[in-house]
Length: 453
Image 1 (cartoon, helix red, strand yellow):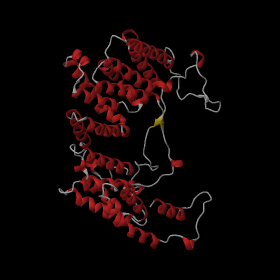
Image 2: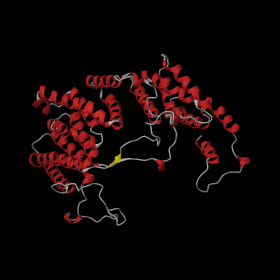
Image 3: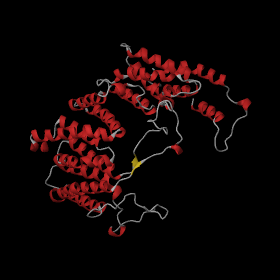
C-alpha cells in the first residue's frame, strides 16, 4: 500500500528539484486508483476486526483514504456508529476507533474531491465519549488518542453567536473542571490520562489555567499538610491518596510558561518546603517531577504556541472561516513561531530554587548517608536527579583540568564550529559548578555505600 501511494504522489506532485517522472502513458489513471481502492477496501474492512492483523488493516485504510477518502471514510464512520451499542461484540468499538485515528486527517480535511468528512466531526466527538470507561483501560486509551488526534487537526474556535448571549458559560465550565479535579482521586493509570488533559489546558491557555486552578491546588496541599499528622506523613510509606493526587496536579501546572509562573513564586516555594521530605514513593516522585518541570519552564527555550496555522483566528469569519484550514498541511517556512526566552526574573527564580533545595539534599547525604533509611536516601537522590535534569542547561561543563586521571575522549565535547553564545539575558549565578559538586558528592556516596556493604 505504501508503495502504491508513493508512486501516486510522485506522479502528481510537482517537486522543486529534479525527480524521475514516468511517461504519461505509463502513469496511474484516476480510474485505476478507484478500481484499486474498490478491490482492496473490503479486505481491509474485514481485517480491522482480526486481532492478529488489525494494525496492518488500519495502515491499509489510512493509505486507501489518502487515495479515495470518499470510498473509505463514510463506511468506517457508519461501522463506528453501529458498534457503539453493540453489547455482544464490544471489541469492535476499540478496533474501529483505532482505525479512525489513522484516517483522522482525511475526515477533517476539505479537498476538491471530498469535503463531506467535516460533517462527521461533531457526531464523532460526541459518540466516542462513552469510550471513556475507567473499567476498560484499552478502550479509554484508544478513545483519548482519537480525541487528541482530531483536536490537533482542527482549530477550536467558537463560530456561533453564543458568546454574545451567554457570558457565564466559561465560569460554569471552570467550576465543573474544578469540581472534578478536587473530587476525583483516580487510579494510577487513569491519573496519567487526566494529567495529559491538564497539560493541554496549561499549554493552550497558561495564564487563565494557573489563575483559576493553581491557587486552589496549593491551598488543598497546604490544608492536608496542616490538618494531617505531618510527622506521620513524613514517615508513612503508604502515603495519602488525596495528597498524592494534588501533588500530581501541582506538577502538571508547573509545565506552564516560565513568565506565567513568576507571580506564584511564593506559593510554589511554600509547597516545596512543606512536601520535600515526604517519604511515600508516589509523593516524592510527584514533588521531584514538579521541580523538574518548574526548572525547565523557567530556564529552557521552547515554542510558546503549537498551532499549525498561519491565519489570524481573531479576524471576522467573513474573511476567514477556520474550518477551511482543518487538516491542511502547512508550509513551515511561513510559520511565525514565537519562542519563550528566559528573562532575568526567571533565571533568578531558577537559581534561587536550585540553591535552596539541592544543597539541603547534598548536606543530608554527606552528613547522614549511612544513618538514614534506604527509602529516605532514594527520595533524596530522586530529587537531586530531577533538579539536575531541569537546571543543567544553565550549568557550564566541567573543566577537565579539575579531574585527575581523566581519560581523553576520542570526540571532543566542544567544537570550534559550535556557536558560542548564551541564550540568557544574564549568566546564571551559582555558588559553584553544580556538575563538579555532584560528581564529587555522589562519588563519595558510592564509596561509602560500597564500603558499608
